[in-house]
Image (cartoon, rainbow, N blue to C red):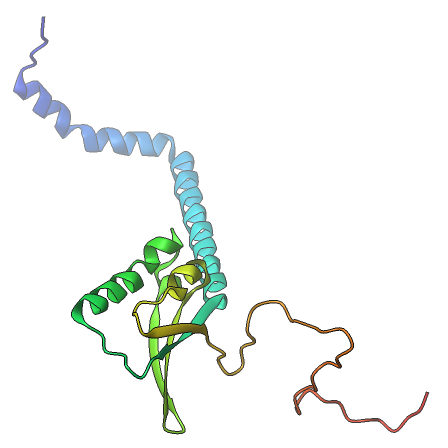
Length: 176
């Protein structure tokens, strides 16, 4: 048989819920305070970890220079495909902070020469390296102040290249 309760009794029980909650919290206030404190500490630890992840991802960004051919003419289908490719960078990175997966298409002008840089997270490097257009070559960009990633190639018997002027040390004049 189904137990059908009188609605007046159910409503009467609901009226006493706030009083019962106050009595429970009064009896176990230390447990409630410890639970709130533990939840706050857990939230702060998770927020700190998420922030460190974003900082680490922002330190490891890659940039590619887009070099169009002289006959480059983008059609609507190529534009849609390239936009979809850039939009899929977030999915390629996996669960990461939003600010760390931002993709920038930067156009700069230096000495009357235009450069187009595509910058994004290192976890999506292979996706960013794919050419979005038929007549555009994608090469690693060398941004001022950043060293290109990859191994250095050394040849046997060849002297190393000279150091930049700022890194050269002045002789002290002492002999050993």
